Amino acid sequence: MFKSRFLTVSRVLGMLLILEAGFMLLSVGVALIYNGNDVKPLLESSLITFLVGFILRVPIFKHQTINIDRRLGFLIVALIWIIMSLFGALPYYIGNYTSYTDAFFETMSGFTTTGASVIVDIEIMPKGLVFWRHLTNAIGGIGIVVIVISFIPFIGGGAMAMFSAEVAGPSKDKLSPHIRKTGGILLTIYVGLIALSSLWLWIAGMSLYDALCHSFASLASGGFSTMNKSAAAYSPLIQYLLILSMIPSGINFTLMYFVLKKQYRKVWRNEEIKVYFGIILIATIIITCLIYNSSTGLEIAFRNSLFQVVSVITSTGLVNTDFTLWVTPAIFLLFLLMFSGAMSGSTTGGLKIVRVILLFKIAKSIISKSVHAKAFIPVKFEKKVVQQSVLSNVFVVFMLFLITYIVGVLLFTALGIGFVEASGGAVSFLSNMGPGFGANGGFNNFASFPCAAKWIASAMMFLGRLELVTVFCLFMPSFWKQ
Image (cartoon, rainbow, N blue to C red; front, side, top):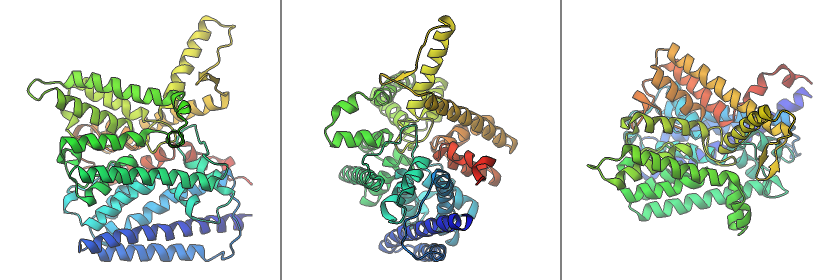
């Protein structure tokens, strides 16, 4: 049994690394177009990744279907994100552009769509490497497992176990009875949105290269930019178009599918999407009022507010102004939005709006029961009673999130990082947001973090992307019992 499971993990990881090597080759093509000095490190990294993947793939050559249960699915998904980041960091390191610590941080940030960076000057980096950096955003946004179940033919029935372990939020709806077809639908919607975003950004004045890179970052809620000043380097029109590109990243892919199928009633009945747009509207109005200055004008205050609210709630992390200079209430509101994130089943991080809604409803139910002790007051979502198992899961994820955040802050402060920077960094990493606060906020990044803090940050990004439970269950003794 152990040998069979070991070979199963080896085979899946091997095929995954072969896929990653193929993605690296796309970046080699970009490096050749721009005649950069990154052709060799990208090519060598691709070759190493392919060879290791081929070796891991060797133990089983037969094309039988792999049976992956829920526990093995959790293990494979956790290993996938670590292995992808370990090898994805090679181009930075082999090319001597960064240390391996910084390379791993940058790659984990890319795959988890966090968007936090430790590269001081991205504009001097070669184009092919920067394209690989943004490609990690695109791959991580749709979810590595979705790519696996769409392109690796032997996963079979184990695909749903892996899909459940990776997809964010309480909702893990299949769009088709066949999980592979679900993966194909998700990829089609995702690639279509990237193509549309790239087109309108290019028409608005971006170079085709920048348009594609920023579309990867926006639709994946990744937040990487080709410019040191992020979105502030571009015109107001492009900033508005980036807002339009970021908003879909916070919407459940299932609802996008319903829109394409013209099933608008299902979208209208969805409680989470109403709260999503309601938060954007209310938060934008509040911050606009807080930061309005007659010398700059209402339009700039509104644009900056809307951009940062959408960027934060979708956990994208693009920046069009130095928000650390805003008044404290406006900064604190952004801090709160970092915890919430957007909708479940989207590319975004954070707790997810559906969990925030349910937490408020649980609190309301408990308060009501304290007044009416004998009353039966169920928690309802979209007029349906929510099962106790779902409510328990929501509460557990919330508690794990809170505990992990506090531990992260304590570890960062123990390493000599200021409290504001430690608090902002911890929520940014755990919610896969990107920007921090204090010295690490605005147009600054996390290059000043000590080496140990960068590894802790990488671990928090990993935990946040898999929503804690998938990873923490691996440390339970019962998980490893026969």
